Figure (cartoon, rainbow, N blue to C red):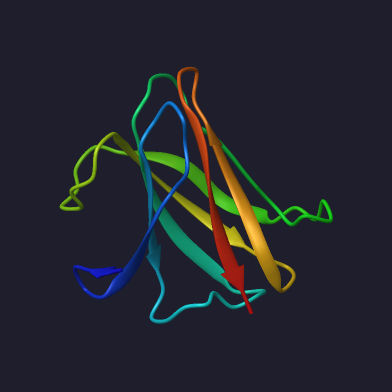
Length: 111
């Protein structure tokens, strides 16, 4: 789905929270080796931890964040954070987000 300036958003999967990702890219899929800014919205409570892995165990480099955002025009439930990731390989990446109360994940394709 495209919103705002045409950035794609992805709804995450969770049993105990609502999770959304806003991808600051001009087109999908994401490109390997290039840093991408991803803004997250997640309900729940507590600090946020994030990791991104391929099924073979390869981890993506988080280049910055998570940085909590205090103001935004993106209207999804929960608190908002920004991150930067560089994905070293092509594939379908699982990005897992965990809070003290609430956890979920999204899958992102990288070409």
